[in-house]
Image (cartoon, rainbow, N blue to C red; front, top):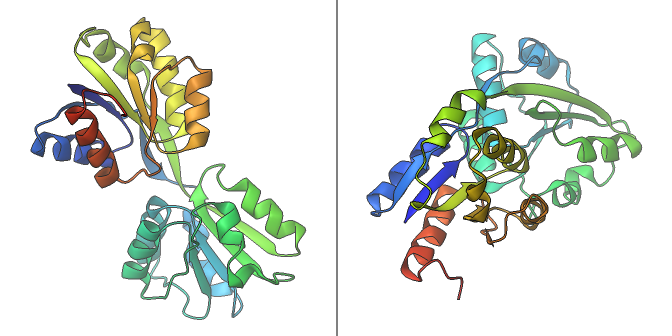
Length: 254
C-alpha cells in the first residue's frame, strides 16, 4: 500500500516518517508552505495597547508560532491581563508553553464552540485580537462585531502554494501503486484537484481519500472522489492509526 500525503511542511514529512516507522510507504506532496504575515510588524504595539480583560484568539499552532517569533524580535511580550482562547488542544498546549498564560479551549473545536466560552458571554466594547492566517475565521469575527466587540484581525502568516513545481512529480506516480491520498484541509483538496487536472493523472480521483471532517468529505465527493474516509482529526497520530487499520483490513472500512 502506498500513500500520498498532502499537507504542509513540516507536518507532511513528519507524517511520512511516522508511516515509514510503521512499515507503510508514503510519498510527500506538500502543496503549500508558510511565510510571515503582514500583521506581525505591529503585533507588539497592538498587545501593549490592549486594555485589561481583552481577549486573544489563536486559530492554529502556526498562528501562535509566527506571533511568538515576531514578539521575540520586537522585544514584546504576551499580555498577562488578557483572556486566551485557542481553537484546539494542540494550539492551547503550544501557546501556553510560549506565553506562560492559561489557555481556554472549547469542547467543540470550531468557531461556534469558541463563541460559547465565558470570555464571549458579554463582549460589548471588548477588544478581541484574532491571530490567524490570511482570510481566516471570518464567521467568528463577524459574530463578535455584531455583538459589540472591537475585533482586530492579525495576519500572522500567509500561504504560498506550489502547484506547478509538483506537476512533473505527479506525472511520474505509478498508476497501480498509489492506494490512498491524505488531505488535511479544504483548500489543499481544491488545489490537489487542480494538480490532478494539470498533471493529467485523473485516475487519482479513484483512490481512497482520507479527510479530517464531514465538510471536507462533502467537498471531496462534489469533486468526484468516490471512496472517502473521514478521520475527524488532522493530528498525525490519528491519521497513522487510521492508515494502519486500513492496511490491515485490505482498505475496507468494515
